[in-house]
Length: 286
Ligand SMILES: [Fe+2]
Ligand SMILES: [Fe+2]
Image (cartoon, rainbow, N blue to C red; front, side, top):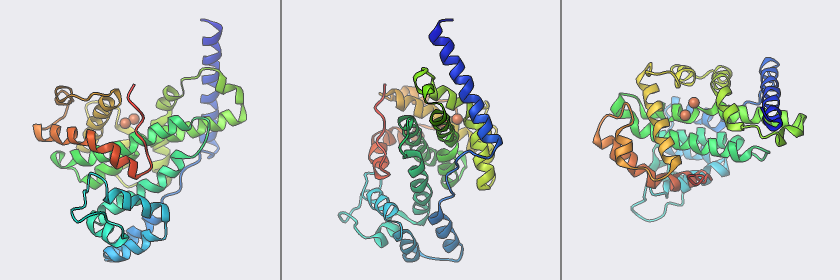
């Protein structure tokens, strides 16, 4: 083993131990459950309609801007020209889509914050958002609700972002770690299921989401929702490599029909514009 390899391995062990201590001492920085989402969900439970939802979202300028960008993106193509009012945006998108944005928007803020590993965190967030839209597009043919699939896609790998922020905490304590050549994404992969589970627990995520977070790397899939997430992962791997071809998508285990393949292929061209609504640029494929 070369000196560089040894240094890298020791640094990885040090980071592992730091993460374990953070978990043990309850120091993992969890993003708060999005407050606008909680308010919108409470209002919807009382029978609120689109105007009330628009009013609640309107108190958050960043979220309002996201909704307006999304409603004017290629996915929703306004037929009557650009939509510039929040009321009309909520009507056009529907309260379900708005609820999804209320979850994604605030979570993205913590994922996109500045830090030494911000590029990795941002790439994970871009994958999370892409997964959410891909999972929702797959859902119906697997007898899964698109809303549930969206949240499962969004959150199943959120543990990677938590792992990366724990690593940034380790770097803040021991700056030389940054120079040791650690494979940060490989380490994030190792920790993401455990940290995702911790978030599910602290947020009190309802079933079946904790199972999705814990079991999405177990094959064969233990539920249709987990199968959707696994197809989503396989498709995203193709997308991140670039040059997605129909013959490769058809080979993804669990794909149900030619129609489903066609929907996924359509998403390849739409996703960059949709993600831009959330202020996310897809990293260029290697
Ligand atoms: Fe994962
Ligand atoms: Fe994933």
